[in-house]
Image (cartoon, rainbow, N blue to C red; front, side):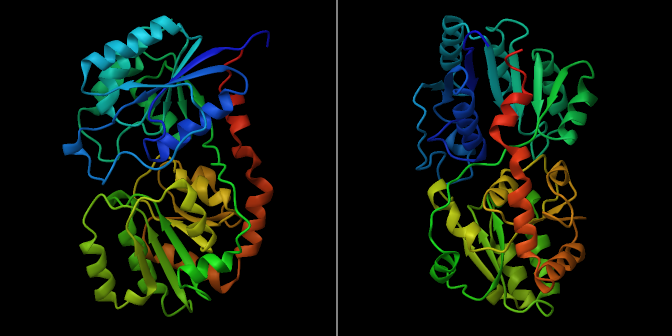
Length: 371
């Protein structure tokens, strides 16, 4: 490689919070090892009236400083500033983070300022989780403006191909977030959470209907007599009322099995919850891929995932975890097997020895940016 590429990336970036922002931060740090990277960030992602969470900003800060915070999806002036910025920088490659059709008009406007053949869009989702009937129409027009679609599972690849069979697709793998582990013993974290001696399951991340917390609650009701000292940590901010979940837990008489920590967890505090847990369960009803799965592997935690979207592509069944149908009995059966057969050490060691294929270095290589 004779010279460094000029790359501009567009998307949420710290201190904006959330998995896509964290992903963008890690991607930029990897790309900047080989290229000159500039980030075009958002001032905010959604109007306050439409945002269900407590804040769009977190305490997370990035060590990467070449960031221009310009964009706002409803401010046309910011679009013009973003387009002017791109024309002035004239990047060799533009990489845009996509997850919701709400941003398509802005993204089409920005893509028009970059030379054809150099426009990449990284799809975290093809369709939004609460899918709208008119999304296919917007996506069809959007795909005509993209040179390369980057996806992270076959499920998203197939969704794109049903809309546009001619678009070029780079099928990659969601890398593992590199969150350094401290030297704090696991039992200190468990003591702090008052779950010493418990067989602990973690449900982590934003609580939304499609993530299937109700399926996990029903699973615990089935497993409570078969696994001693079973405990569930439900950790994350809720974008919906928690009352139906608490009501269900009370009806099943399993209040003692659940601890809710209903707030957004900063990156610096994530370790506490994963290292306190023996098993991470993703009982999703729909999905593309999941950053939670990446976090679990970062901390060498086995997983149970439902066979929806692209989740199963990341799990070696019965080795790094279990792949199940999205129903309480199947989830419960695997919880029972995992704990009663003492599979933690075996599965954790397998993850430790086989997670290199999810590295950021390999993710960058598969993009073929430098060819």
